[in-house]
Length: 280
Image (cartoon, rainbow, N blue to C red; front, side, top):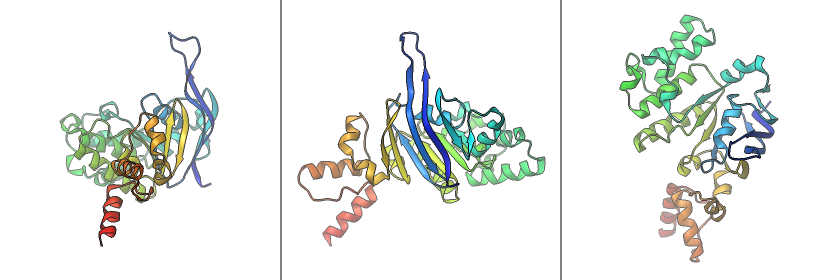
């Protein structure tokens, strides 16, 4: 089975007091996420991307349709722990995910709940803290750490459960540029180690470094493809009130002025390489 996640015609709806008709936060979405892939999902606030993520982790259940994680149906209560162990989730605000007064105790919380043996928990905690460069802080209280460090601890807590997939719901949204870079480096390292990554983000430069980019709007998937394929629709993306990576915007403006430059350029590094080659 090559798919880590399969979403079949997913609908998630809720009712608002000021509306008679239910709101479709996710509206007939079907997707397959390959094992070992790095997928970024972007969209403006209210587009449904976080609701989709919570359906994958079984924090929310479909109004209709189905979500499968490693073949387990998220609606099957008996498989809930299998699903949560397979697909760990990291949230936007790490303070909402940290539960203990000592860093290493927090990282141990997940494996303890899974019934892992104490000796194995000790090894997992140490390995996870090393993987996010936080081993030296293991005896500290989480509230003494920076936002970026707290998010790394939250990621370590998920890693300690040995997930095959990690869903990250805007994990860098509350961090400064340094903290964002630290967290993204860890995410890319985890992907290189074979973990399936599903990143919900509103930072286009983060999405541009994924294998696949999905753009959502009003609960639906409106664009889906490689970063080059998706960001090639710069005008359409702008019409959705979204930004595009700086290099993509520059290419878009230059092409509108008649400059012949490849639409496939999506990063600053690619732009610099292209200009250097032209100047030779």
